[in-house]
Structure formats: C-alpha cells, structure tokens
Image (cartoon, rainbow over all chains, first blue to last red):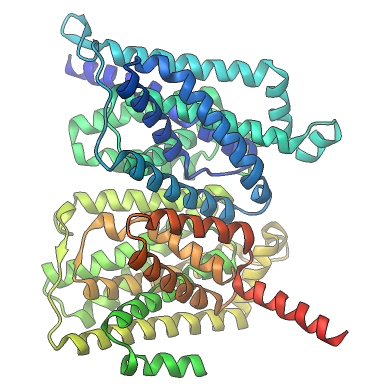
Length: 289
Length: 304
C-alpha cells in the first residue's frame, strides 16, 4: 500500500514539474535559448503570490492571473529589448546572459524578501481526500489539476490559434516565416512572454504547496532541464510525460534511499541524451539534434 | 615577456591580500584556458566542465586524507583519473552537439556530484579536511602562487602547441564545419576526444592544487556550476578561441570581483550579474578582439 501512496505523491508532484518545465521547453524549442533564469522567474511568481496572500489575504489560486500577467510583461520586454539582440548568435551568449540575469534576479529577491524560507498557509492545507489508507491532499490535487489544465491550454494555444501557428512557423524556418509576412522579432517576444507567464504561474502553484527561497532557483532550472530532455524538446505532451516520469522516479528513489534522488534524475537525463536524444515525444525538426 | 617577468616576481611586492587575489586569478586563468581548448578551439560548449575541477579536488583530498598519500603523489593520480574518465565518456558525449552537448556535460557534473556526495570514502556530504601545509604563512602563499602559475603556464603551452600542430588544424576544421571535416577524412571523434581529454586533465590539475590550497573541500562547493559559468565569462571576456584571451579575462574578472566583493557586499550578485549581461550585449567577441578593432580604427583614422 505504501508503494501506491508513493506513486500518488509522485504523480501529484509530476503535474507541477510539467507546468514548471513547459515554458522552458517552448523558449528553448522555438528560439534555441536555454533560459537559465527560468528558475528565478518561477521564484518571482511564487513571491508575487506570497506577497498578495500576506498583505491582502487573497487565496493563492486567485493570484495566478496576477503572477501570469506580471511575468508575461516581464518576459515580453526582456526579449524585445535585450534578448532579441543576441538570439541568433551562439549557445554561449544566451546561456551566459541568462545566468547573469539569474544572479541579478536572485539578488533582487534577496533584497525584497530576505533569504528565509517562505510558505503560504491556507485553511485547507492539511485536509485530504482519504481512500482507504491512502491520502490525497486537496491542495496538491488542485495544484495538479491546475497545472495539467494550463499545460493543455497552452497546447491548444500553440495548435489552434493564429499566434500559435506563427510561433511554430518561426521555429521551423525563420526566413520562410518572414517571407510570408510574419514579424519574427515580435513572435520571439510573445514566445518568451508566454514561457515567462507559464513560469510565473508555476511559481504561484509552487508557493501554494511548497516552501521556497531565492536560492531555490537553480534547482527549479535543473528540474526543468531534466523534464524537457526526458519528454522531448518543444513537445507539450512530452513535458507532461517527462514531469510525471521524473517525479515518480524521484519519489521511489527518495523512499528507497533519500540521498540518491538527484543521482537517479541526472543519470536518467544522461541515459536519454546518449541513447535517444529526441526524448519520449520530441520531434526532429524542433531543434538541432 | 614583460607580463611573465612581472608574474614571476609577483610575490616579492604583493601583500597578503593581493597575493590571494592574484593566486585566484592564476587559478582561473589556468582553468579557463583549459576550458577554451574544448569550448574555443572545437566550439563545443562544455558547460559542466567544472566536473573535472571537482573530481581533481575530491580525488586529491581523498588520497591525502583517507590514504595518507603525500601531495606530490596525489596530484598526478588525480590528473590521471580525470584523463581516464574523460577519455571514457568523451566519445559518447561528444556525439552531442550545441545545446545538447552543453546539457550532457551539465548532467555529467550533477550526477557525479550526487554520487560523490553519497560515497563514504570521499567524505560524503560532510566534506574533507586536508592536512595543513607546514611552513610560514608567506612561504605557503608563495608555494601555491607558483604552483598555479606553473599550471597556467603549462595550459598556455599546451594551447600553443595545439594551435600550431595538425591537431589544431583538425580542430579548427571541426569548428568550421564538422560534417565537411568528417567527409574530408578528418577523424573527428578522435580529435575531439583528444582535445576534451587534455582540457579535462588540465582542469583536474587546478582542482587538485585548489584542494590542498583551500584545505577544506565539500562536493557542493567544488562541483558548483557557477564555477563553470565563471570560466565561460572569462573565456568570453578574453576572446573565445584565442590562446592568451582567457588569461587576460581571468585577471579582469578576478580584479573586478575583488572590488565588487570589497565595496558592495549584499549587492555583489546584482552587480556581477549585471556586468555579465553587459559583456554579452556589448563585448560578445571579447576584449582582445574589441581592442584590436579599435586599434585598427584608430590606425585607419591616423593614416587618412
């Protein structure tokens, strides 16, 4: 029975992992930018939720539109005025630039909210759905549901709307996209904005069920790495699958031998890279392979 | 020549604080020049190369603490370990390109750190306290200054040799167009693995010296991906793929960092991060190339 409980815990966390990684995946898949500040953007969303909850007593789930909108604007202007200058250059530059940004954001978070671990406390945090001897905490279930719903919403946005088509066209072939009249710089700004928005929302969800501090950003970024590589770059169903696989693998490893969770997740990442670079759901044309 | 003379005479006129700053600069110059062999000469962004620094440090620490080996015996064995391991993982990792190679080396570093943290023989998560060097504070400082200076000189020498031999020629052809190089009969896998292994061994050497110098090491600190980023910033600032660029970059970053730490404690991340962003935006080809193009522009103005 305890194995089923571990599985449930893993799956519930997996939804959150998917939501954390999806923005990272879209930005990387479309623009070949590995955004090392992704973790800091998640933390930024978490602090927005924490701050609104602390000062105005508003339920963390109700803060999602605020954190999403704030990060959308942040991402849009960041890409428009800074990242568009280096987007077509080299892997080095975007990696190092976003690392610098991560340092800056971490310092700003430290200055505004100090280094303490923060958490949002809700009235329903401790109540659970009980099935036999299994516990499913309501808050985690709601986080899981929201995360999966938003991830699916993004899939619809990418596959069924004009802007989604423009983003995909740009990611396949920039020159061809410009030939048919797409303003690719604008598309890049919107893509980064969407990726940042998803990070902000994931941050709000993190704040609802976990503790966080400014220094957590690196861990969130590396988790996103693993999920994206496992599931396949640029693939939204892949991000969901990758998130679930990573979280369940981590949950069982942590149950068996707590210290080895990271070793397993990075070992998994290396194995996928060497054996099947496309990941579970990746398509060839999304990026260099 | 002049610079080499000044560096050799350094301990004669530097005080304790500046000895430390310059020793750190020499260490990062050695490591960044070694990283440059992979990242600059073949253009493979070995993002997780701090793994060799960490392994060199942990191996030396383990041999000295757990097996009571002397420093002079522990260093070559640590370097050998890095050489063998990098030669083993090289061929499969170097099949990856671009971002995937960067992530692959990152994963190698994180997996190695997680493994080392869980092994008892390496001190695990609690770290290793190395034996303290005998001798006065000044003589110890001088000892490590010259060790890192030697490591840097060796790395620069290796880079010079690579650039001037067939190996460097082959590496440049891979950087320009790997598929074309392979089609023209260049054994790309072999050349890439040789360059990557040399780079790993040299980074491992600085890691080994660092362990004895700093005398207390723990896995999260020596496998810190921030060290990798710093090496990349240094290479970028100095000029990717140049032999002396990383040395200039290391001194530039280290002097800057000592000033920021000294004067803006509390905002150091903000300022250093901001500097990194500015370098990427405005000096993407490095200070050496920037100075050269400026010099050319001035010369063109004067000759008119």
